[in-house]
Length: 336
Length: 218
Image 1 (spheres, rainbow over the protein chains, first blue to last red):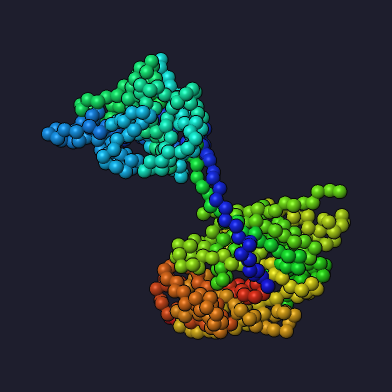
Image 2: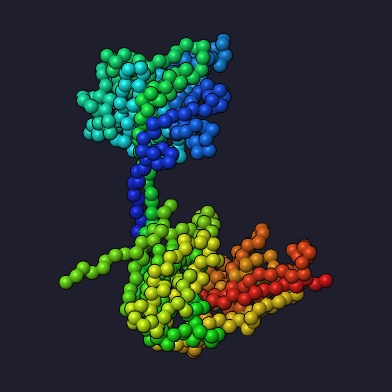
């Protein structure tokens, strides 16, 4: 009398793609960038530089993304052991991304028309991008001195999507909102400005293309290849992002929802076991009007298993009147 | 000609503590198969069948009341279920446990056989599907089980072992057997332990909560 079985057609499973702003506080564009001197000076600072949306000492500070320079030959950082050439934090970063992105230790990154043995990785913090980056939403401005470049992915220019071992891959080009300003969006001399790997939330910037002069399509980014210091290229990239002061991108995730259609027919659920519905201890209905024209007010929908365990519950925003002249259809949404 | 109201009420559901537990178990017990409706928070004494403006206003005090968000504690929500009864019903099913409260000494036993008054027009006093009984603090009893309902689901509920601290336990049956705890340390410096026993008719939805007291044997 109080439970009603659901039919198979009362269940609908829906998977919806949800996009959202990437950065903390739902900021559309990140225009202020901060680092942590503690992180930079720590052992992790040899490998990457963490970027925050506010001063890292602030209670609301959260890592937004990191910057990590990778070099196949180990250039740009101090060797782990002075007697072993080519093994340093930058070579570790290079190998890490090569395995993750290419899945082949014998292959190098073919960025645009060139095979590169170095890059600047910009992995977005997982909590920011949720499931993936939303192609077509990237707008990153890099500035060095008087040279500025606006970088986006070329997802709206390509007819078919290219895949690598890390999923979808788009070239980074000069343009905005997923389309190049003109042509391919990069010069043949430098190759594209890198890759966007939306499924793992990573941008790989082509350090050589950015290092080039403005005439060659670059901005003169300072790439340090000496083995005398750690993290110099990470810092110069950070400076270029700070001076560009505009990093815009959206996240994308798939929300799977269970929709359950709860149907109360006109003759159902018109009486209540609410103690205020009853007068006295013997169960008399409180008002004589309720004997032939009972009215009840639905406030809560409970979803049960066969064992009558209450698994999920939903509240209405306001009471819903139910009587013998009304039928009710409530769509209950259960997100996973 | 006017437009028909084709709106569908859409609500977001949350998992209860029990739902999360069964989802984590992953044994198939998290499977929604039925629903119930409730009118928690509604006070029908606010309904006014003598409203001077007429019947359209009888429920005015109820219809726009703001409702609280759902509680994830399954024992604190869906308390008062809406039930399907024939038109003309003048008396609602009510439970009779034979006790207004229960007081047991340590180690003492008691069997409760609930009855449902006004059930199915008064022609039947025991509900076919039995009763669920929930003790708010399982530590108060050495024995807390239900007998008389032999469905697979009821037996599964009755065989569930609840361990740990102050948690509730629910059993199913037509008779509920209780044996008070013999553990002295539960009392600390007190001479009594207290909890509540909630019994719900599985068919009628009728519900009754009574206090339970266990007294320490000096």
